[in-house]
Image 1: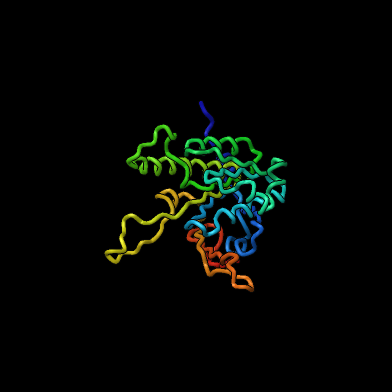
Image 2: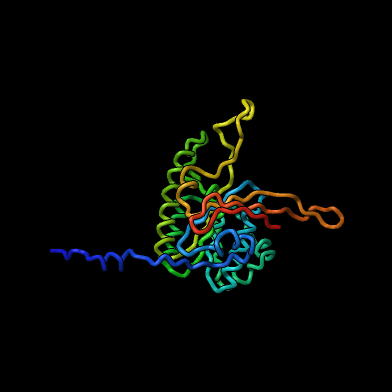
Length: 251
């Protein structure tokens, strides 16, 4: 007959003390609104329109983790972290040293799930970055239809992948950042006066992550001659179980 679990057994297996282990992102503005950085055991969703700086933000976070001696797995489905970008963000040496693991041949959600599971079980990676979920396919290229019928399947597979990743992150005390490209809301149309708001991914993108950071483009930055040199990045936590909701702008 199996031994009945005691309260001490249950607490030893599932109990916690509420402690939070935070890691600085290296970006003061982001640390200030996120409660000190990124928390171990948390899944973050970063979303926004193209050109708002999501990939740049994640490249800087990856560099900070590598500087601290942590290994980072960067799943680059958008191929945004090429050699030129690595040089710009000071990541080349960490790539050469093996602290930055760059994976740019992950094409499908199933492949992404396989990679996430491997790194979580391997135990050598502290931070997983997926850039981006939106670019991952629900099917292998040879199986894609031309009528767009895979949209619902993408949402279902994404829900499964993200839910599993959240469980792995919580269990192994890892940190994961999943990026989403904003999409037009197909349920509204400006011609009838409805809002054409952008939204990030499907149902899972709103409910699975522990924290959701919206990234938007603010005012342009110009040099003394009036040439555009960048823009202010506006960051808003729409959901954050770690710190109080806040908004901040970063040059």
